Length: 323
Picture 1 (cartoon, rainbow, N blue to C red):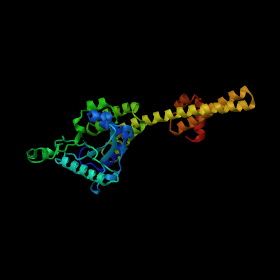
Picture 2: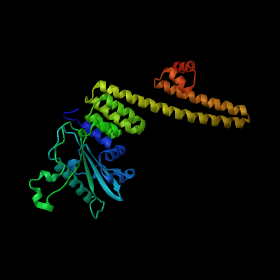
Picture 3: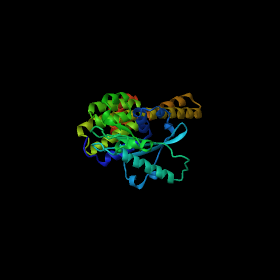
Picture 4: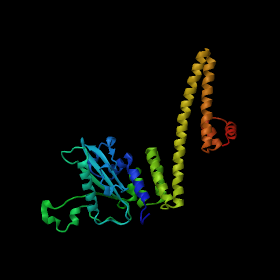
């Protein structure tokens, strides 16, 4: 997946890291500082482009969060670098970005006695080794001669290709799975990681990852055979979600049907009425679920097994509804 990267990568990464789960996992798994543990991720706020200078408004791959650390407001900037080779003067580019951000903050309606801290993260997804300096002082000739007046600024680098596939698999979260697919692409490894992720991660987060890889397939950055393998995993996830929702729906309808039957029986003053109403409510729920499963294309035998209805009953429903 090397070469010139289309805008789909920019937009895709921006969407992923605009999700608070991805943001939190990026910091907790790949930024090894004690203060990260103290960040108030529950109250973090994703910023829009209000504070960004016009020069950077069109940049698709920057994400800014406002978050509290020890009761104080700080900003965390995530800048994604998709070039296939490193930019020697990246430190200067990021410093320019940060100073522009500070100027916009100062010009905003928010009042400051002091400017808030900004922590810049550069995420590099290229294939070549990152060799550019992270400290601008190393880009300035004889900067050390100026002593304390020399310029110093450093950004935090996350180069995906410097992280081994073993470590990414061991981390086993959404961000590590994304990095695994980007720089250590092996469809079997990725499929395994996605399968494990489905068991431990929020469904919406896993779906975002699948959508990202699907976009790569649509833009011919991922082979058809590889995508089909990943799509199988997604289908399994969707089926699991569907069956769980059906179980919840079944339990609800069954309960409501029983309740309705009891109320009806009480109105009639007959115990038989309660029992009949409970049975009728339960059967109604089973029929609704069976029809929904047939719409999804599930096999008749599987539908019968899950709902408890007979195969012949399921067959009649299928014939009547045309599924």
